[in-house]
Image 1 (cartoon, helix red, strand yellow):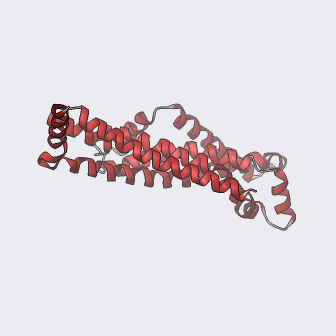
Image 2: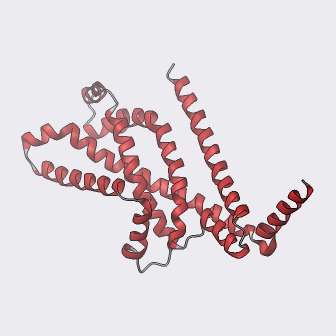
Amino acid sequence: MKEWFLDIKDQFILNFVDDDRWEFLLEGFLNTVMLTIFSAVIGIVLGILVASVRTTYDNNIETLKKNKGLGYYVFSIVNAICKIYLTVVRGTPVVVQLLIMYFIVFATSDNGLMVATIAFGINSGAYVAEIFRGGIMSIDKGQLEAGRSLGFNYFQTMMFIILPQAIKNVLPTLLNEFIALLKETSVAGYVGIMDLTKAGNNIRNHTYSPFMPLVAVAVVYLVLVVVLTNLVGRLERRLRKSER
């Protein structure tokens, strides 16, 4: 038992204390958190825009078809672009999208963190869009008609009546998407970003000891996910209480 403890102690010192290798994990942790937060912001903005276009098209397509004006053709083209975006992003692996963004789209940029943030944000936006679209479509159509009867136009009805209810309905699912996004950022090392996974690999490359650094990375991810899951659980309980 004593020998085992001493071996663990030696491994800890070798992997984290010697040459201040713990700084790899700290840098990886900070980059992972920043990458997740900024990608989530991009995903929310993009997701709301795409969901708004698709739900507006679905709710007004019959009226637009009757008029056959410029609005019909504009909305049809924009809606088709949104559908292609959703199909391509959800149908291809995130690591492939990351590599395309880094080596093709932003080949002249040396800011890997920015490129990865955009790539993960675009990927997350496709899933967030479907989450929001489902939330908006789940609201009774009578709410839309009630808003119009109060004198609101379609945009005002969506902003002040439909979207607040939809956001409340999809918030737990949205937070679960951010948990998935956090874990997806573990592939950021493919483009040279010092995320948590890359930090663990760097330590392993220096010490030739895979157990301690990789387990440490797994523990950090686990703690982050547990904390976020706990927050989601608390939020869901509050939302259930507010509905009573």
